[in-house]
Length: 304
Image (cartoon, one colour):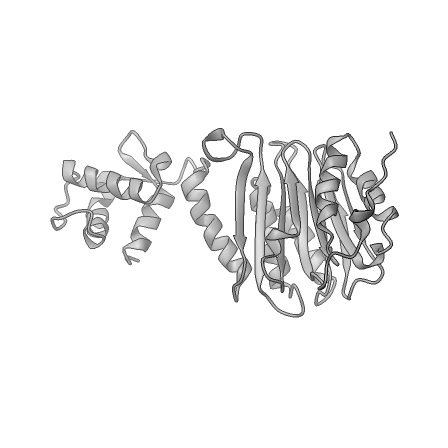
């Protein structure tokens, strides 16, 4: 099957260099696909990541060409491998030496390309089910740290991607500084209410510490939307009743001072707090509270 790119795909559509460090990844256990990225560039999540469930994930950067993303996903959906997609995207592009792209497909094959004219340090690492790439970095240690973190982190794909991004940030990241970050992970019917594939979709468009802010937001996203509590992490209501009542009282949900008894008023106040904070999927039908919900309540009430 032959495929030729439209001429508009290869024109210079980026007026500024999108210096970036990113990772594309695949989880063979869940089928999750995703991209995590950070840059000294406004709203990097609006340009670099392209992901489609059961198809693949693409990061297009340096003199970024968004059509690498849309056309790359089309090629993957038509059955081309990650390596072939990178070859097709770059082979007909007169500006390829200024481009950088990473691709992973739904079989876990990954590939990356770094043009020779990308501003240094620029490079990539391709591993099993992932590829990391970056340009205008402090050095190769950024990509090495990202690859190591991805390979050695336990958990779901989202955990691995976040740890990789955090490792790259700590290793120095973009040598010009920090501005934005993003992560998107897709899973078939893994989105809100099972009505979309967006399992995680978070952007930090302009921030002094975008990766740290991304992690902070993800922790709330995880607590609010994902059902993956640690089965050993819980507290018994009767054992924490006084501190829960104090928290609910401080926050205005409980009108009377703590009594030390988990009564109907306490139960209603607790349920109201849970619902108002959108944690209804974390309500248990027994005498326990999930540990993360309990800690969030105390933190919100200013109790340490």
